[in-house]
Image (cartoon, rainbow, N blue to C red; front, top):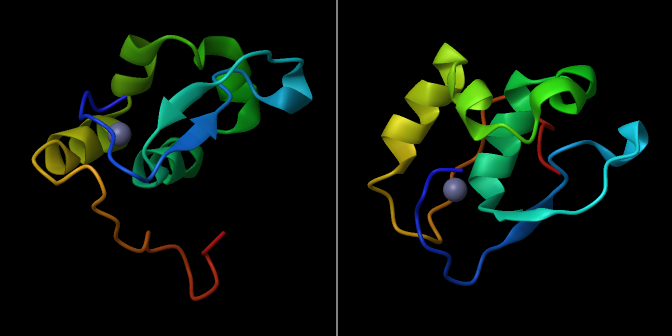
Length: 87
Ligand SMILES: [Zn+2]
């Protein structure tokens, strides 16, 4: 999503959620994965999850990508989302 290369940290994201009969996965950085799910519901992802440009129309996500694109591939920071927001 952010166009950065991958190092060791890779997660597999379902562009269309499994719960919505999505098939196939794409590699994403863990931090990007969190950002996607923090900004979109499964219903939204089912509608336009495969369209990267649609995702980036979300101001919060576009800002995140701007911010993360200069970070090293394995960069990870806790996503602020309550004390037990870790997965
Ligand atoms: Zn990424």
